[in-house]
Image (cartoon, rainbow, N blue to C red; front, top):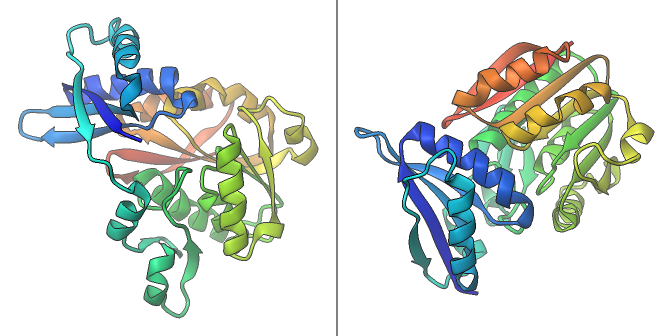
Length: 291
């Protein structure tokens, strides 16, 4: 299928705002959204949405409507992408990633594993999370750090994507683990990845939006919740997340741009959850909070 990239060029702050707005409007529909720096000296960034070429006209109008209140003058540009097997192309460039105690690698890099590595094998595919993004890397490192401090009995991976974080939790903790995602395709992919990593039976899986499912009451309350999503939905679900957290529970949050950090912390401070540690990776932050 032919693909296009629809994007605006603006300042870092404006593109961060665009990322939030586009994510709120389009992410649940399955459109990949990203920002990247193109000119550091002049503070020029791009905020992009990737889509099938056939949807270009309708999406341009919808993006203009989405961004108009905050960034009214940014023209929407179009880049037609080459017809490439993106999974194979991505695998060619993905090198093993070390995140704290973990080594995340593709099946093409099994020979890179060293004795003592806590390995997670994940190939690029239809669900987010290969360990190569700063948010996933930060979460894995933070999971390793909190696991050294205490034992957890009931753990939730909210928005599991490829299942990489749930797999990491299962390899590290003798806990009951529930992994959920709004996307049933992601859950199917995550199940396959967990089986491939030898921990499929250790993890419970469910398709669920936010905390709107009885499964959370059946498996909770949780003494550790990991949520690698985006800042706006994380702030919106702060009360629900707090209600599903056990007394003395801890939280790991990511998908948060560095400039969004204070807003997310404020939303969780209101719920009686306070900052313990921040990891900074490539313009993103991972937060560790506790009661």
